[in-house]
Length: 300
Image (tube, rainbow, N blue to C red; front, side, top):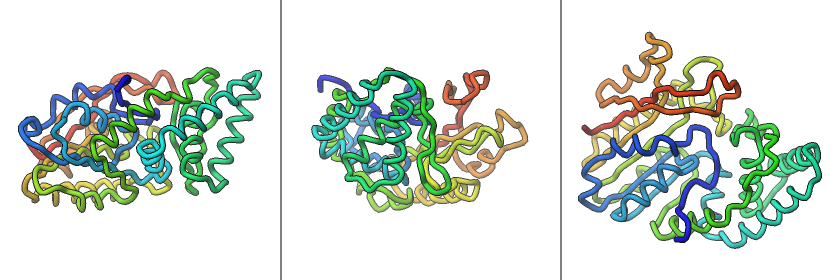
C-alpha cells in the first residue's frame, strides 16, 4: 500500500495516541498462533488498523458499532472506495469554492440538514458523514435524543475532506484482512468467534468523570451505569470460554474522585492497569491535558 491504513474519521476517545501503551498490554500468545480479532465498539478504528498491521496471523477480524452511519461508512470504504472518492472530492471542491467563512458555515448547515432529514444511498450517506466530521467543531460525532447529528460548524476553513490515499489504503486492508462489519448490540459479536484463539478489544462509551464531562452520545441510546454493568457481565461470560482473551478501556473515575471506585468494584476479579492519555476534545482548553484511563484485562 502506498499509504498506511489509518482512521478515516476523527472520533472522540480515539485511541491513536494510546496505541503504544495498549500495545504493551497485548497478550504474548497473539504472537505465537493464528487468532480471531473482535472489536465490538470499533469507533474510528485506530486499534483495528493497528492490530491488522501488527498481526498478519489474524485469520478473521470482526468489527461492530451501534452507530448505523459509521458502519455504513466502513462498508462503503471496503466495497466502493472509488465512487466514494469521486463524490467526496466533488463535495470538497464545492465547499472550498465558497468565498468566506459565513458562506462555508451556511454550506455546512445545509449538508447537516440533508444528512439528518433526507433518504440517501450509502455512498452519499458516507460522503456527508466524512464531510461533517472534517468541518464540524473539533471533529465530534454527537447526536440528540432523536438521533440527529447536532454538532455546530467548526470554523476550520481548510480541512482535508477527501483523503483518497487513506480511503484506498483502508479499503485494501479491510478486504485483505477478511473483516466482517456488523451493526448491532455488542453481544452479537460472540456469534462470530472462531474455533481457535479469540481476542476482544472493548472501547465502549466512557463513564463520565463528572456531570459536566459526559460525552457518550454517539448514538441516541444512553450508555449508563446499567449498561456498564451489562458489559461487565458479558466480559465475565467470555472469561468462562476457552481460548478467549479480552482487554477493555474506560475512564479512571477514582483518579478524579477517590471514593468513586465503580470500575474497581465491578471488575474486581480481573486485572486493572492505568495508562496515560492526552484528551484535547474538551470545549474548555483549560480542561484539556493528561489524565489516566483504565485498562482492564482477563489475562496477566
